Image (cartoon, rainbow, N blue to C red):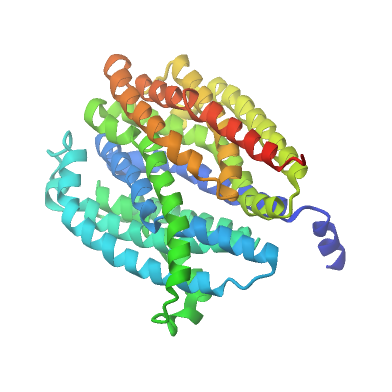
Length: 439
């Protein structure tokens, strides 16, 4: 046992966390891909398209932590680097989180009927959509998940990110097992709501357990308000929240726009290829998530050359994985489609694969610099450029999808990155390092 511990200590802690992230996110990504087949069999192509549109809203509901998780992670990392106590920030995070639950549940109750009618405008002939407020029920589960998921940021700050990686993977395994059982044995057929709950409720339950474990000591002290700490945490969280909102307007409008302009078959095709290519992106995301607290601590220790070296390695690694993976995906595309959607007539053209590959290469470049800047709280640059990127993305997706169909969604996304983050973030990173050089 001692030899194993000594062997593991030879590796940087963030690479150990990243390794656990690769394994768990590989499980998540693979399940998300193979679940397509089971969901298509259970729902049928039209209801599956409605399901993917509704499920895409989860990305918006997950913003309901209002940046508290990211801000708390950085405060804990800074406290660890300076040997300062950070319990006050944990208590403040819990107090703000409980307030956010009440606020967003009220908003969901008021707005969900309008949202449901708008995004399902092409699917109102489906009886379940007219009978059940799918958005309200699913949204409530995801909002609670968003709040308790701040615990995963806390574990990353503790450099115990393997907890944050393993639990979501376990919840996805449970979800996959449930949808298989429902598909085979349940008398309830073609229920969009049931499919959504199967893939959201386990995520809430698995995050709730460690959330209670870490924060239980602060519940008894919940009415002890330190308004200076709350304000400090809230102001920094607000910066992350604003950036997250604008990022969502850039990255998470695709399904909403497709719900108004694109047919079920093309939405299904887009969703399948997107999930397959996300297998590649998950690998890079795992590395960057583990590197975030490390970059934060290294920056406050003035280890700038080490950070530069890390960023170069991450970009090279991400490019290599994406290029090789894209070639393999295209080479075996017929087999992939046959396995995942055997009862559909989906036959994506080469340009579809090429656009996805280009999009994810650009994402890797931009996300690496974005991770570093967020880890050191250099958030002003995001407030400056992201509104323009969101505007370009939405306008581009609407315009190009009207001309080129589903391909236009990717063209709009790619254009928004090329015109903004692809050059803005590297330039800002260079300026940060330049300002730290000795005169």
